[in-house]
Length: 267
Image (cartoon, rainbow, N blue to C red; front, side):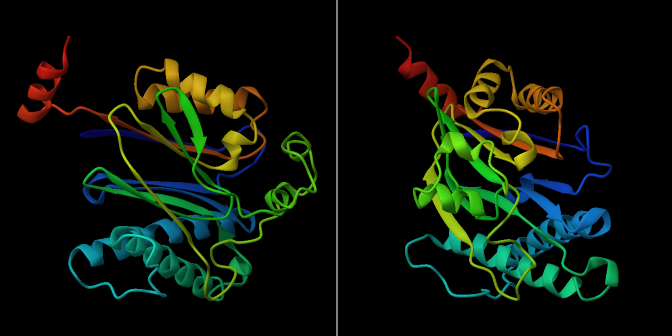
């Protein structure tokens, strides 16, 4: 199976600075979006430190030099636990950096990250940046927001429609860098040919409905075109926040085995 990926981050139409960061590291099959908070200097630095540390940790792990941070979750694979460990390591880096400069005090960031190995996807997230899967026309949110609004919906105190317009949408119940340790949610799935994975910050889904996101991805010719259309749509709706998107599509590949598979499945 062959992955095609593209990512884009945009300041939007209202914010003076972009506090989002994205990471595409094909050599590690690592992709991530982080949405910083704490003002221009703090938020921008928090998201960048988080993703740089995430990448560095997994590079060390590939060389066998990265100790596990936190406890392993026996319900998930080694790859998923490694990604969770990397996020916890990044949390510690952001937390410690916040005390190094007065202007960084209180900074933090969300993160949603995934790795792919042997057609299996591991996902880790903290905060309200999201992962979605588009498979055979069905668009599914894979992550659950760590936000006050989401807690109200899950508790039955607010409907999904009410949540779209409720105050407090930006209040997070969990974020990177706010405490010395952080709880990381993990998920896994088996990748299928034709799947599209989307990672995004709330600057996208806060402006564009899920149904519209799925439709724009569905008609795009490739991940780059889809990313640009999604960002343009969010900006066209007002672009009230920074907008970050990463799209990955799973294709058949171009090798001998992929060619034989296509030949014998025709007709």
